[in-house]
Length: 285
Image (cartoon, rainbow, N blue to C red; front, top):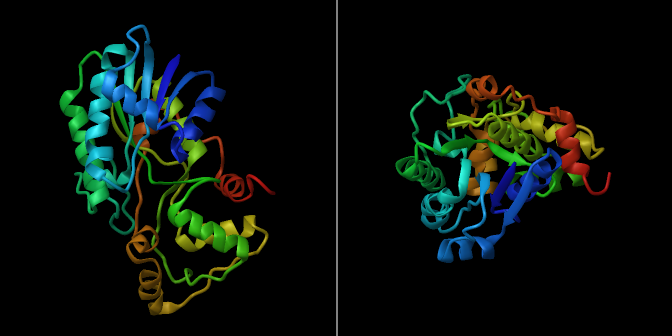
């Protein structure tokens, strides 16, 4: 199958190209310059793809990147598609935080709580508004993706775990889903092979407390468990240290991907501990 990957040089896109290529797909990568040219001039009329995967996204200029760009790509590439368009969205387009002990699924209303989440949700709506009946539109909503080259909160935790820094996380009992980026790439492959249409949450392993997640990272770094309890001071201390990023650690964020697994038969190839070890030690362990 011929697959175009838009956003191919980013964290998610580079992993998608690598894994999809390993699983038998023929990949045409579009970097930023190629994407700008595509939007401006269209693409070679002789080119055809079975599927296009759009994994562009960002936290800056949200309306341009997260809201308008997916629809513009869909409209430009649609005449060259034989199968479908897969949009990499985010759980933030539905709900970034979830009720304690209750994972949400696709039947729950989308109530994005952040500007980023609203831009992703608006991007999904814009795509659905221009969808052609002859072309499948699959929207995947993964949680925070991690891996060897991940940035953001995961990178902060990774650097801390390698140094063996104790962090006051043991008092946090909230549960969160995180997903290994390679497992997500295999989920994308499963969605394409199953010719999915619709919107799906996708995760790979049961949710973890942030303390469990950090201790696994520290163990993979050879430092042993480094999470300790700080009692009621935990939340204000983490909020003071991380600001708006604190939500990524201190709130519940759990999702039910039964719909996706039933539709695709997806089983993540990497277990949790192997995924963490690969992310921490990919280049030097």
